[in-house]
Image (cartoon, rainbow, N blue to C red; front, top):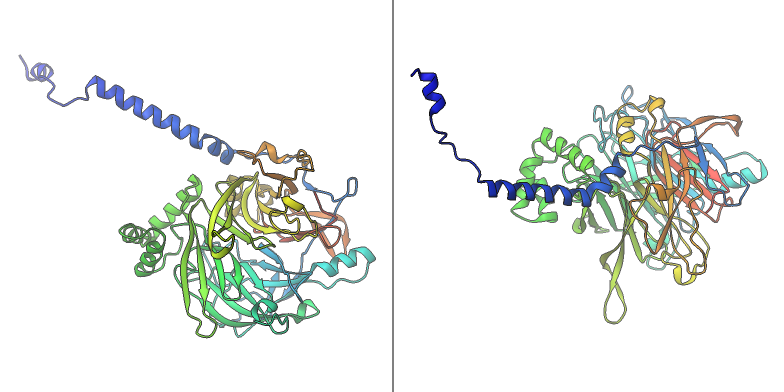
Length: 537
């Protein structure tokens, strides 16, 4: 018998899995897939959806039959920093604006701060790319209340102007995103509104991110405002992967950290300090070792985003007034892509956006037996899904008294801005100049339901109910704005030629000005800010 036949007749000595074990393993695998599908199936289906908007531009009118008046702020101004010729831009523009803030308080009401960066297509530390950090971005001041009066009587308008940064180190990059302002009255023990306000700004600088602290000086015209540099917060746990912040006071703030693994990792010792705060040892050392490998950290950051992993967190930062010493504690963890953050007008609710949930998380202060709440003791109380990929969020300004349903104070609503499709946003971020692939925008408002008011359907062309993973028993979600991209106005308005926003990332609503003033910022939109009057729900 030849060797080939002998080989064929040799008994199979390899171990095999018994039939019972194979059946059990198959059953386990099947049940795992079923459980995964039950838990994540709706999320995967929602995340993969790329719905088409029925109309190119829709804004919710305050008064039925009266279309809101909208225009884009396409403004250009010579760069006022003059840091390094050939590196800094000759001009700054209101282009690629990631966020905006409506300022509140004596001397601040009616003003907005715009956070723009014309270089965002080359330097984006969240979605990429991170090619060139040198051309810096800028902050702008805009009097939206004065612009509303202009709309009413047709007079000249005070156009947006660059905010001068006095004393800011010339060698530092400046790529502003989230910001917040504390009124001067809150800084002074006597409640005196004189003196500078406190400004915090997240700076996605070249080496790694920081938080810049300024004293903000107000003026009657946009060009008269300036900010005096105070210090840079470079604490690793305060600025690990910062996305947005909200000030709890002149020396205390909450900062969202959108990912566990950063695109630009700090040294191992600092990474271990960050992860120790979030998870403790021995996990901290393991995570720091992984994050120190930049290519691996970048890959894992992408996985966090695509899979919607709950790995983001929020840190609480305390700044000592006279020494500048920074201490950091953990506010919460386990948040999928922790993004925007805001505090309600009555101070009782903190909202955090979770982009890949998608939706927002609400936190309330825990009360003791005497019914008193401590400002350092917050608990997660609600999860509200949104129809968009929740990015930046802001509580609206309103004078409405909603009675028992006034959860946020003064009848305020929570404005949630984001992309309609996460996939389209990721694609558009790679080439934001290609407007044929523009990521559409969706601005929604979350309102506490009222017993005396029936809950009506969302009248938007694409109703929010069609995209919500699940509705909430106590809150309604309705659309303020849906749009594709900037389009040319039939007739220029006070020199402004466009209307509409692509890739909206932030918006704010003031229902007390202009019959309802809505400002929308587009992270990859040119022009980057849209202003609308006559907006409401």
